[in-house]
Image (cartoon, rainbow, N blue to C red; front, side, top):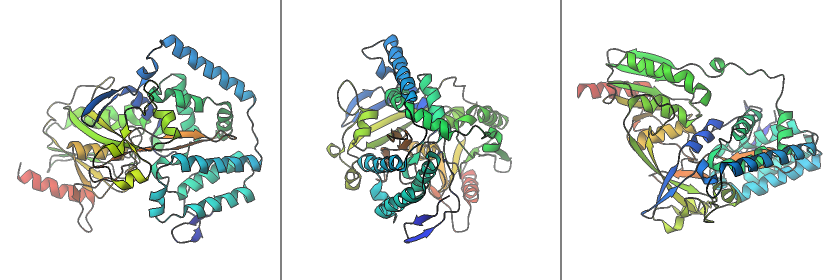
Length: 465
């Protein structure tokens, strides 16, 4: 671990804990989810159907051509593996470090937010450059340096070095052609020969993966008979837990069909997959809930690579934000100059969707939140509040919901992948979901826990039932 600077105080300190290879934000399953769902975009009262999944690559070609293209990219990757390096000079690592900042300055939208948080970006940049030139001699050390750098940048909007585990999850999805509308740009990154060799080096064969039960505690369930309340504590929305937790939650709800209230406690939940909450939390209650969100996008080379509509030559589903009323100047000054509107209906059409649990239509739903709620969990909180699906109780979430998932670029010498969001929801209060969380409907009183605040609200609700 490196001792990094405290960019808010001007003093250097050692962070208490910095994971060697953090996996922050969206899981690989999120990419699969995005490939399954289309987005209907309404702009300036004009309805534009935007197909942002597998079909976009089948327009004007057949599946045989797509498969041939995929095989060609795999063949090219195998050729480039033969030329890939396993050791890097300090000069090569420094070249990658310089490229990192050049590409971030071109595409990353949130530098002004970091400055507002008191982070001195020029000082940060030079501090880590000095560490690199003075102490780093290999790929693993370079990866640790980058992780510490992004940690000091608050990992804002999923800014991170893609770790080996996540890389291999995406590679598997790419092999199965399940990356949807981003299939082509991700394939070019994942199948690059140098990238494959470097991630093989970072993937320690000695590491043993902990069982899911240890990595992610099970859902805690309880029933408060006096208030007729079903309670669930859900620590994570990780896609590995989708099936493990799904039947558990549904069966417990079926056992307590006399309940008047259901509490979903997602405090501390750092996210995972939207599929988790759509299938396990929303679907059992049935009904349809519309959720419309304005999505802003930074205009950049990465935006063109990941979102360019190959047919029209325009950014897919987006128009210039200055052409739309109500976009704050602070947003356009960040370079987020394109806007679209996402119109979703939840739970929506889900693969293998089960029937809703009987007699739950009139159950009142409550969701407990805090500042640690992030990414897909923040997205769930946003859905609850803005669609009216549930009442939020607690404080404020941590943000991180981006709408389309992070994009990435590769460092030219090492092939390491840097990921971050270039999109964000523009909330009704003009804040950006990638940066700021969503406020609770019921704020805790001084010294009151979110659960106690929820019980207080439920007691008042039952009196008026």
